Image 1 (cartoon, protein in one colour):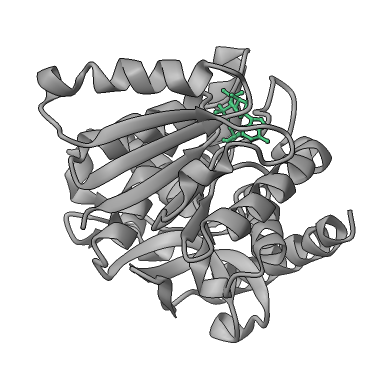
Image 2 (cartoon, helix red, strand yellow):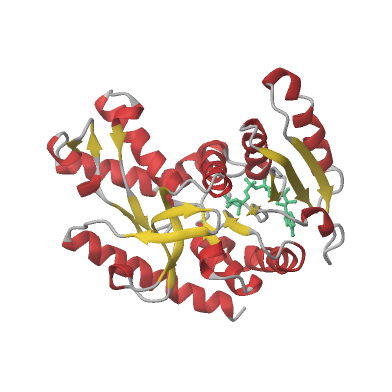
Length: 316
Ligand code: APR
């Protein structure tokens, strides 16, 4: 039996994620849902009509769901559910400005997932990411390892892109790492960054690395400021789809994700951006990497910032 994956929210992020998942030609079915009548059905029909051209057999099923959960039967049996429902940022907004409105949306979606796809691994991408991931775990009641968030893969990809551009080297030669939160307390980790195996710190001066770090931290806002109508979705959907693929293939890939941290790095009980081994059950284990003292201190600071907001969201 092939796998079934659902993408909740058929906006820019959700529709591009559904397209990428379908084009992998790995899943039996990709379900795409939204509360806007006809939008998921229309996008599904459109993607399905690309099947003969792109050459994939996966079928995309679009379905409108109601405010009280009507139509959610369609997600039944999903191995994976990706939550993209929620408002994106407008220029000048921080991800945190979306906290209350997206918390209401994500909580409702999570409760329906718990009811209709109780065995699914849930990948959260709605912002603010770390808080929405924590909220989804609370609202579903799923084990922590089955709820994870997408942020680190995207932040890392942005960092890698900026390094490759700065050094004019192939993207495939660059390895970067970011940990922490998907926001102000993001922790880029230059000590773990390499270009063709050489430490980045030997290839660029500290002030140039700091400039790339700052651009990475501001990576989402830079796109929002240019688009003016919403936030990024090509790189984000690539990251979310790869995470879903690692789960579907039970690959054991070590990816930077938002995962439940319980003792690693000396941090207890919280969702945070870390590297984790991903498999069919979600997070197999959090993988600790060697950090410098300042990097470790920044990671602890990020954990505290996320924890404070998580408590607030839980009480909303
Ligand atoms: N159930 C399903 N879909 C919903 C719900 C809900 N309860 N509430 C809103 N949506 C849908 C909207 O109808 C819209 O089609 O979510 C979609 C969001 O799409 P966009 O506005 O295009 O936003 P997008 O760029 O896709 O970003 C979605 O990802 O990166 C984050 O910050 C971003 O939180 C935002 C999310």
